[in-house]
Image 1 (cartoon, rainbow, N blue to C red):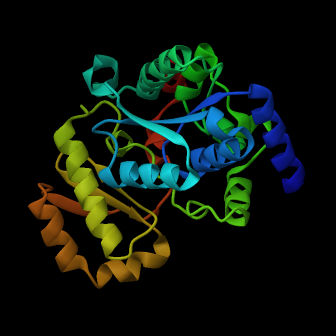
Image 2 (image 1 turned 120 degrees about the horizontal axis):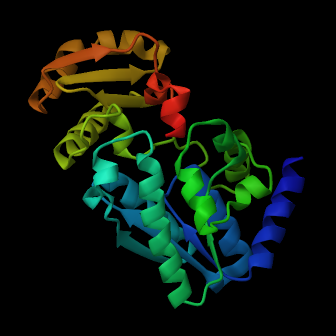
Length: 271
């Protein structure tokens, strides 16, 4: 089954003839870029959008992998922090961000006479609340991993078989997802979250999220690492206090991706 999907992915990419890949450096877009480079060679352009919602490490890793894959790679600055619809942090903020970013990618593709702009969404993404998908559909962006039927687990397995360093890379959505809906997104908050997660990662916590409530850092870590946290409570408390959090709490439900969406009603998701 995985082999059939791999062949289908290669066929889709060959039919595109020339592509621009929106490349975040995560497991999904890395696999897409690697197979595109394999099938299309110099007819591939990778573009990574950077902004205060990105971590420095993510950009560095994307640059390193693009170099390893020997593909042309542009890093552009995204302006979503200038969008009121984004910084006001409504449930639809991802729609406005994706529209902005992929409109710019389409402009770059048109200037380079590249017919297709691609993103790395996989089949599992269809089952989650992802308003950015609407923007991609409206802009005519293709998602070959979805078209070929790849789940996240299959993305990781094929990446492992292809010896991509991202095969087991934890998912890392943009830093703005750490801030509860309705609370203003600021660069100060984003940098505070980045520093806190970088510190915790160095202590061995993965996966993790630091949710930035008004004065509180709410830690989401795997339940099996709760005891590890107990061994570092004083150090963690002091470091996060230094970063500007007045209260540090642990979410007893443990790590789960997209936990902020749990607060949304169906009306919130539609509006």
